[in-house]
Amino acid sequence: MYRNAVLTSSPQPIKLAVMKPLAHNDSVSKEPSSPAADEPVASRNLVQVIARAADILRALEGVPDGLSLGQIAQKVGLARSTVQRITGALEAEKLLIAASPTGRLRLGPALLRLAASVETDFAIIARPLITKLSNELGETVDFSSVHKDHLVFIDQIVGPNRLRTVSAIGETFPLYCTANGKAALAEMDDEAILRLVGRKYMSRTPSTITTAEALLREIKKIRQTGIAFDREEHMLGICAAGIALRDSLGNMVAVSVPVPTHRFLEHEQQIAESLLRTKEELQIILAS
Image (tube, rainbow, N blue to C red; front, top):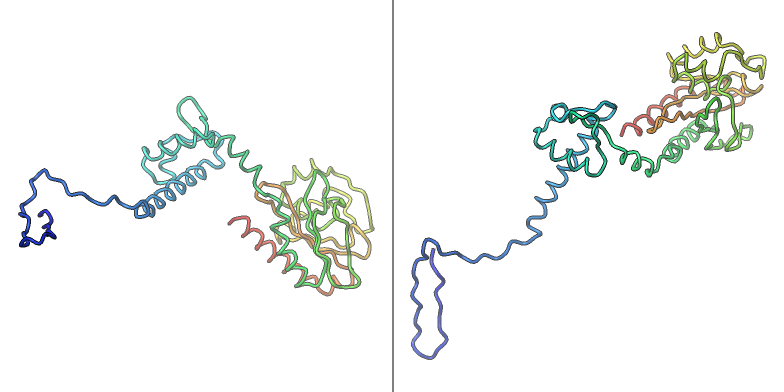
């Protein structure tokens, strides 16, 4: 490596400066590297750390007693030293806390605060799908949530038919004699059902189920098929089909299609199949 030659601008004959090799300990000045050049590498490293932190949080999901650093490392496939650095940062932010004096870690209270601040109104998420369902069937579609031993209607897409069923938003209905209510009950075990609705029920029509034994027999069928029916059990002249599932926070929600009886009997199979497809689509959204 050589120093640069220098040309003088004097009118005297041009002389070239002497070019001599650099000494072993000479240094060559370099332009400082641009921050932008290092940015992609830094960004990739940051994304990788965030992804690893997310893996660690997921590994502790549903483990109230916590896990040791070694157990976490095994679950996420990282070196123990890497896990220790990341969990240390997560602990400092209260996203993880100590689960035992021996160093086990579990999810921390800061996660609850973050979860509470997220938009969790599943009705907003579900609305495009229940709108699609209503358009497909040409019928009213109700969206409800379970509150103790009854349903509360929280959204509705009104169908185009002149003869249709419409319930007011905020109106409540019992669980034991409605399609959406029975669909919700089918997501619980039998003991939980009996604790919630008891063993004897008020008759609303000649078709209303009034005993726990009859209700549990029907619930068993609903669990097998995934869909519940109300065949004039809540109101004469009205039938319905319904499905239920839990949202991301574990709240029970339901979708139902109430239809005048004469039209329901003609299209029962189509209504049931469309509702089951809607349930699958909702579950995909929840899993994503």
